[in-house]
Length: 481
Image (cartoon, rainbow, N blue to C red; front, side, top):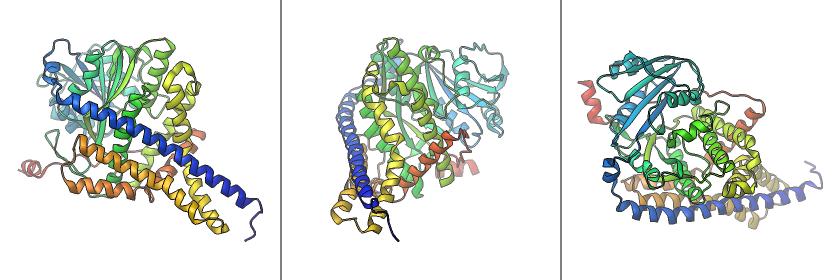
């Protein structure tokens, strides 16, 4: 094949640009990891002496309204509510919002928790689709179920805000389980700085492979299937080596929708959750930053690495593809909507560091990565791929990333030891290597599809297939009897 004379030079220039890009990206990861390492070491020392019983017993501890948005969640909703009822916290309510489910979500809640229609004050601080009924139970007085017309997750969360009684709201995904002391641990920043902290997020870990009994994770283990294990590695890296560092820089752009606490007055003040995006958690966090800085308010949005939420992650490629396409589409929409924050000194570390990072690496990264691999192949076909360049490319694009993933896993093992078996830790380390050969590239393709969907204005949530929580052997025998 006769290649154009200029093509080899262009490919060489692009290849070295890709190397610099990967070097910059992974160096930022390294800086975030070092910040995370320092903070987690301090956090573990402080937590060892923390007296959570005093927070529990204090009359000054703020009560919390826990909101669960549920749409077609019949497989997991009962276990999620049971886990919330076992939370170790002095005063809280559970609000489940059934967002137009077409399955047995509402029926399962009514039957399991002996619910009846009740009259409940509904003040529409944030506009929502029509609420068609509310349910309560004498047996479970702190549980309220709201049945409403389908409006999406954001709309369901807003309905929960409208009916809530307490000054703090906590969002929990309907396929998630929080540990019994998670609220106590996550509310601590609000108790320490009540005038400043407006939002706090906890860590999300995967429940796939774990045993669940009576709404609590009774045995922690990794699944046998490779896809959820790859996501476990990804989650550990993102939370422990990423969000802790961004929190230290006061530039945390996302409180995970799976588990986060907010001041209700602040959320209402900015207009509640937006229905115009597919990543309502990112959008709300960024809007809080923007609004509070625009109004010269002193505030903090923090990440706490200890409170744990266990969530079910996709077990098949089609579900994972829909999830990641939606996530990236929402990210791009939110970044573009708030593009005025980019390099804007008014927004401090967010404008100078976090926003440029998300623009340059999260938005453009998938294209650069895929084109980088294509350029390496073209360089080989043109006969201009030398050994030194290829080794350098592998080092900055793959080996550097493997080092950071393994470091995050070892940080987890040293600090929290949630995976007690060395077999699981070894599996995480192995998959931190494996993810670089196919999985990471596949995620980049999903993200590119999200970019295309945004350009074509395609907005579909997509069906998230749930397997349900895995019961322990003892519980399965008990249920069978």
